[in-house]
Image (cartoon, rainbow, N blue to C red; front, side, top):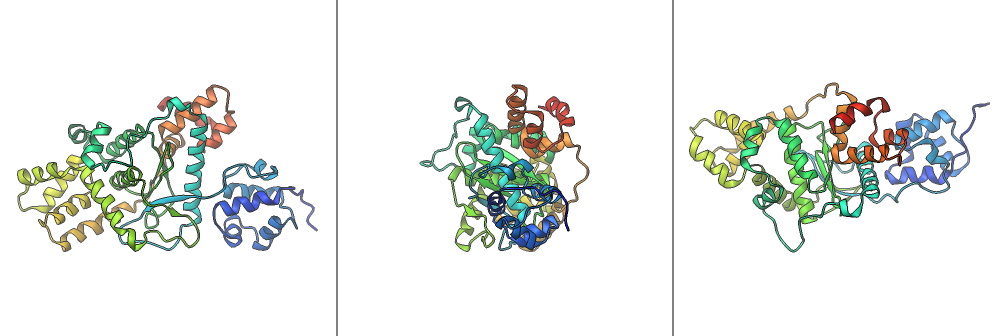
Length: 373
């Protein structure tokens, strides 16, 4: 006989928590190490979990234990849509539960940010549906000039500075980890005001910069959304041309065509290795990026391009090292969102426990995070 104290949860909350991730009883059972039969019984109200089991369930769904005792769901109904970018040539038929969870977390962070931001402080979206913007025009709107870009010569600085430019448009740029880039590089969620871009931190800095600009194209044009559900198709064939347009936009954004052609005129010496190396460093882009541009200009052949691309894919699948929690917090959440959480904390509208939950970091790191904001 099981004499452990039971948690008398509201079964509808458990059903809501599972359905918001569009997942199955089987997956919940696998991820929590609780039998599928028990999960079903908990949802039907035929049994109650122990507090130890409830803690596992709450951790998996990224909810507080108290949420399961509420009479009704604590958040919006789950209807998540996103355009999603993967590695070239790689796709699967569905989103993993881990990726779905990360995207929903990002949307809920956006909801929190919107709830605590005064309407007058929300940045007006500078792009209209009536106009088509080319990459150079968008660079001008951002104030992103070639001289500044050439001064970086470091892919990490390039990504973080571009992220700052994007946040200045009112975009929340979040990063996630522990998701394979074979599944996911980036996605955009076009909810206005305050749209979202989510970047996979498992990718290289150069890859992240390209993906971020690629997703900006989708936000500017308010293009296709794909529902997250167990049978979602990632890039339907009829939308491949849209992805190609987004890639072309990102390419011309990172190095405008006239600038690239000028570099070829000045520095091409029938030595693709040297040219690719020097220009990629000069503009803080990947070698694959430069090789693709050379292929488009018919200066190198496809075989050479694929050699460079395949090597770039290998480098993209890097292993992450230890990141201090305070650095990790800002890397994942960005400065705009993190600043909003601390403003609510300092004003007394959030407790330290709540702020810890919103930032997903322990309270002992707060001082270091604040010192970096």
